[in-house]
Structures are given as structure tokens and as C-alpha cells.
Length: 298
Image (cartoon, rainbow, N blue to C red; front, side, top):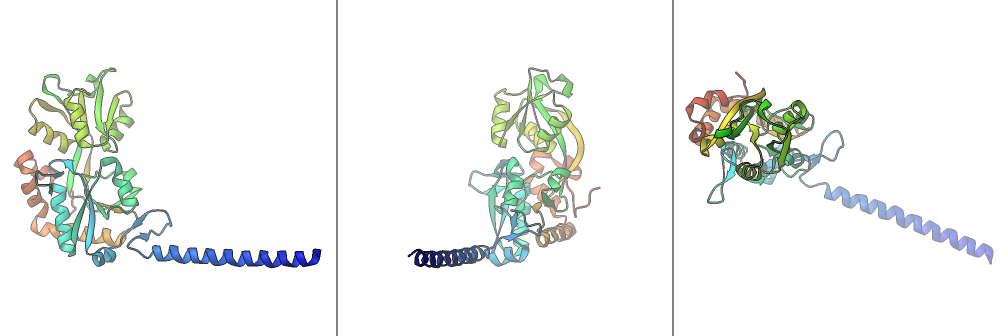
């Protein structure tokens, strides 16, 4: 009796093992099929995914991350249409690729994540090039110059950071170079952080901070369009550039964008972009200072 039970037990154990192997193989087969979509794991086998240039073309559309609340660079107008300097460039990219453009509204703090998770193919959201970011994404050639700036009420203009007291606060947007710069170089300054441009703007206008630090292009635009405010510090820190970004390792798309930026110089595309989207805010005086053609910084 004992021997028969032992044999029966062994047979059952063998059957279970076979079923487990079959189940694992079936699971692997399903995972493989799921992975045959439009995303490609990059070469370092991380969780980062992206679509190659050919995959984008085959799909018929490209997903580009832009701001929806940062006039004049990326915003949604009264008709529900995306507009702005970055958006103008995004539409040209889609046209020259021969695909439709799908705009994806993004926030400053989510730009890197949007690329790494495959939510977008390109970020064109006033993205300043930094060494830290370049470790996480691949930047193409630049198309705009930028520095940091500080705007404050005209009657209490901040012209030097030393004017900011211990009980004062400076407003910044999370994930921006202004936040990084002040935390590294002026840790004594209290920062009030907001996720979106519109929230930061509302807080600033409601007196939640004595000043607002951001890209100088943005604070200059703000002071030029809203009465009662002054850019007391037009340049803070180093000169930087704005550039498109793609997922780390997406060489085919990166190379295409670089070639596109170079070729667009022949028609002075970014000067046209400036004159279509930025001249009303900055005037002609800032054009040569801000625009970068062909990826060449003068």
C-alpha cells in the first residue's frame, strides 16, 4: 500500500512540474507578444522605453510633450489650440517627418519621466540643458539661449538675492533649473514650490513670495505683459541653452532632430518662429540674443 501511494505521489508531482513549465512558457510567450508594440527597450536593459524613428513614421503620429500654460512658449489658446514658440517648432517636426502631431501637456517636474516611460517621443517644453539632465535624457542641438532671472513687484524690486530676508520666500516651479540653482547656491533662501506655471503665477500675484525665480525669458515675458512687476535680476547663474530632448538611447530620433535643426538654418526657421510667437512679448531687441539657428551658439 505504501509503495503504491509513493508511486502515485511521484506521478502527481511530475504532472504538476510539467504544468508549471508549460505555464511559464505560455506566460513568456504572452509577454513577448505584448512587447511587440511600438516601444523598444533601450540598450542598457533598463525600464526606459521609446519608439524609434521608423516606428514613429509607421505609426503615422508623433507624441511631443509641451507646456499648456506657459505663454508664449507653450499654451492653449481660447480656441483650445496649442500655440507658442515650442509648439511652432513641434508642428514643423511633424510636417517634415510626414506624420500627425499629438501634443501631450507636461509639467516641468515630469519632463524626464514622460520620456522614460514612453509617454512622449520628444520633449519641447522650454527644457534647459544641464549635466544632470543629460545623464537621464539625450539632448539634441539647442534652439534658444536662456539664463535664470528673478521678477518681483516694482515697488519692492529685488535686485540682489541678499535683499531676501529669512522670513521671505521665493517662488519656483518644481523641477526647474531655478529650483536647482537656488537650492545649491543659496540654501538659506526659503523656496515655495509649485508644480505648474499657472499655480506659481497665482501664488506670486497673491503675495506668497517676495520674488519669482525662473528662466529669464519667462520672467521677462511676465513683467512685459503684467503691470506692476520688474525683472530686478535679469541674469542669475550661467548662460544656458534650450534644446529638444529624447529618451536616452533613442539615437535614430536624436540624429534626425539634429539634422532637422541644421537644415532649418538655411531658411532661418527659428527667427521666423520668434517673429511669429515671441516678438509681441519681447520685441525685436531680444531676437538675436535669444534665437539659436542651426544649433550653433554664437
